Length: 66
Image (tube, rainbow, N blue to C red):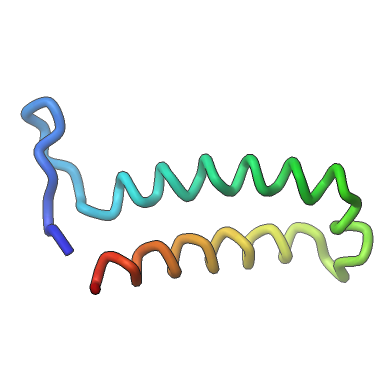
């Protein structure tokens, strides 16, 4: 995993592009799940959303290790 990435002569953490991609993927997935009514069956929709984002981000960041 790269420690830092040069972005327009600005050093940013290596996980920042992964975070940005996961946020975009999460927004799309969140809209789809809301349209399908999945959050109606969740015990706590806010907690479900946070757990979904955490799973997406941790899974994507683990892919960088290999």
